[in-house]
Image (cartoon, rainbow, N blue to C red; front, side, top):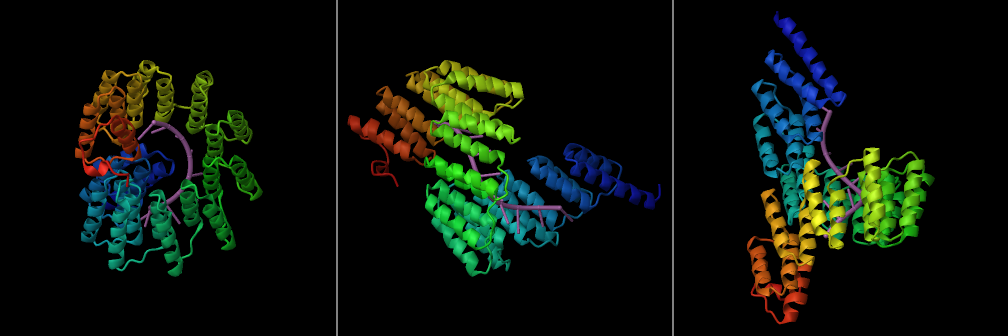
Length: 461
DNA sequence: ATAGGGTTAG
């Protein structure tokens, strides 16, 4: 075959990879990418980048790395978009250091990090959810400014959302003012992050004020804006106001989403208004929106809290009938309900069922079970659950220790409880409000002075 | 062809 022939074949291979990506057949696209290499066809960047992007969207970080390495091996030079996409993949997988290292690598390929590169990494830190994450995000921001790359609206949106999720709306508001000072116009995403942040702090007045402000600024609220407000008002028990926002959605020519319905259904469930919750679910079905796992989880939780395990299990059957898969949350709710009814043995069987269903139990699962056994005074079973959790690669977290310490206190084993308290501190786990309450109510009240750092005896930070 | 917002469990 002539060189020209190879050229044509390469173009066709490109088209094939692109076509598969466009039709969401990423597995086939990856196969076409590999085959093209076997035949010696050189794919172009215009098909490799969409493939990388599709793999990132499907959280296939291992395959993203494979494709990236293979591109270099086949001398398909990555460009700034390839790097940004791979960096996004690392961030989504929580591999922040690898993401930062790639920023350095891209320079040796003649690519300069762009505002998108930095925004991606800043967002990665914001979403890591660890203490001091905003400090790291801020460090990247400073680095980008020092490299003469100006933050844009997206940069501010990422940071504002990060601070809001860190329960620091005042820091978010300072950034909001700063972006306006820099003549960057807040958009609907900026307002949505702030409204959601205030709603999660229970500050619905501030959230409503922002809704007014955005309308004055001619930024149109969308369904996400209303969902955040509905959630905020539901959480403080103002169901009537939440329902009014639901009506506003249609009044403004918008369409309520599955999240809108789920949020309101959950609000009714949490306010012990199961009949309203069911009316809302009927309305949702009437409007052509079908229930998903989250809908069922909210309703099942509601019925369980109401002590109505019969209705809860009817819904579980309905899920199976309709082909809506139970997830980790469904199981955790059911396990919690059984444990509350002192049926921890039955709950333990659900743990086995989770593995059969291919679900990986979370910390919540194990902690809930341990709490159930502790409350039944069965510390041996609780400790077995802990061993099983650690065998599955989950390390004890603050809630695990709280549950076990409370269990030991309940049996009057203050000395052993104290040992666990020390163990958690040694492991660098930071006691929370619940830990302090246990120490105060269970240990100090019984005249036991915890043999630990003095700061624990004082009031919580 | 690359970056940002809304719902459920301890």
